[in-house]
Length: 494
Image 1 (cartoon, rainbow, N blue to C red):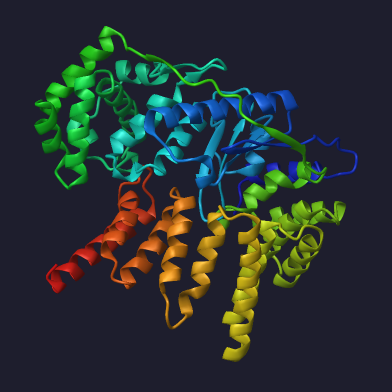
Image 2: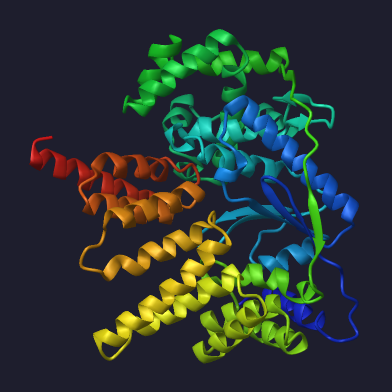
């Protein structure tokens, strides 16, 4: 049953749809790497978008990265208060001012304007590093990198600082009992730590260890050797002792002394950038449906009060019957919790008004593909699947960087006698290229590689899954697939 808080938030969302309510104006800012939405002022929107671009430039300068046209731009939503944040995610714990989500339905971040954006910068660190091999890193180094960069600053003139102290992490390290450093070194991520305080210390110690390791040229060199050894399968503690010549206990003493001596941050110059930012206004329907639509895209629909959300989006669509955004939001909610006929009608109406609406095309393809699976004869099934592929080709023409389209195209082909063909494998590769952060897509791509006997490619795809510092059910699935590959290789004598 939904909680009283959930029902209250959804009731407030419905109340906001009444004609007497004043509508906030939502704007959309697009830059090289981001699409930022906000119902605040245009000036604040532009300033925050520019700040994100400067942070991305700092990440590229220090960690490397390809051109922006090789990635899907990250959507970021700026909201005015906690109530608005919890319309998008009613189950969000108290005290959280923002979050990042990566799933098959979307990859995005949302946060309250004016509050600390350390969470967003931390998660963007993961988001960025996933494109450059984050899955090769031990859990502590992955989290430590993200924490290390979360406090970074870059001015408009290109003056940057990396490694500024994190008061919260420093306080935890001073006041709480430390985890044994061998546990920190061996943990795949925070999910390997049982209690909440321990997980907090895992983040704090990972941050301190990364700060120490990056604070000296010789230690950076040793860190590279350690990373290579761990990536090659060596025990993390043995690799640490070989690379740094110290036991976990000696490492603990080193870190405590380093923290007492005062943390050193790194000033540096970043080439000043003046990002090109295009701002446009969204339709009035955005105030009614944009945040509920985020909720409707959840990868865990059982956690949503679907009937209440459907009712709110039906009310919004009735209020804005000719608006594509409202129609698409209704179509998604009807598809998940209502009637497929109503979903198809709403999505068809949306596409009549906006023929290249990617979300509408994806949902229509899903409806038609399912109709093909349920068809009474194979001829009709094939016809429906071709219609579904037609919708997806239109979506691909509209945005060739949308990972959801590639994943859908590959999945439609699963029932074919020649699946996975070389073209199917390339489609999966592109889906992962544009969404390396989505573990389920990596898993599906790895399965296709496995079926084709391309074990090396499958291992590359699975490594970030089993090393995912945030855990999840995909970790165990990834480990099982790696074991299956090892068994197949052993039986083949490889």
